[in-house]
Amino acid sequence: MKELVENLNQLFADFTKDAASQVESGNKSAGQRARKISLEIEKVLKQFRKDSVAAGK
Image 1 (tube, one colour):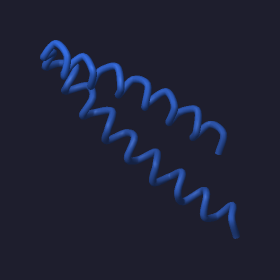
Image 2 (tube, rainbow, N blue to C red; image 1 turned 60 degrees about the horizontal axis):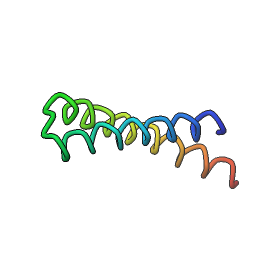
Image 3 (cartoon, helix red, strand yellow; image 1 turned 135 degrees about the vertical axis):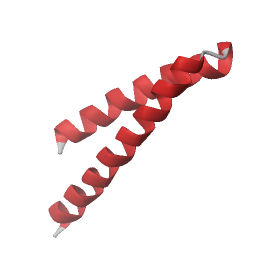
């Protein structure tokens, strides 16, 4: 579970950096990276939810 949280923190940091680059300077490749990372974040969040529910039982 700790690894998932650390992974999420890294993904959020990467997403924030790339999304900001796209918004501030119109960097299209940064936008593409941000979209790709958002899909990875979704997968990790689903795994976190699954593990969290299992740990709560």
